[in-house]
Image (cartoon, rainbow, N blue to C red; front, side, top):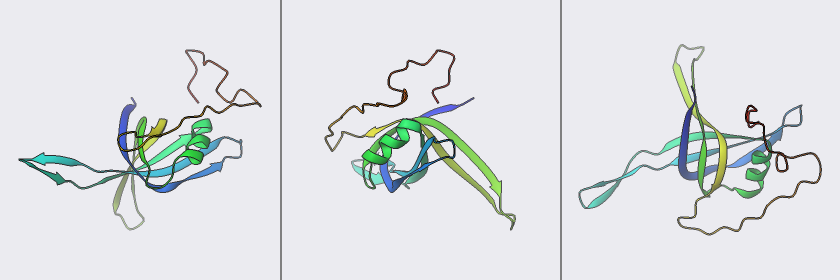
Length: 136
């Protein structure tokens, strides 16, 4: 079972774009989500939560061209949890997100959207996936 999640936070590092041997694009960046709550008549800041975000294919390329460190983003994707033990016996864990969608938050900013035109291959823009196909 996969858990879907939506995060709104600030990008903590520039997206790093790379290509696998198969030519598939992969981009990774970090997001900090600040938790804030109202306590009586004042706001109290909670501890920030940090997530690594992974994007694939066209999304990876578009994110690397559009998102920069400090940008407030909305990320929709699947939650991943990984646990391991170090050589010293310390237990570690990490939560990351595999993104399905990434976009700028328009709460305190404006944005201009331009659609990418792909001229070679289907690029995922001209093909409607079969209902039984995975999105990537």
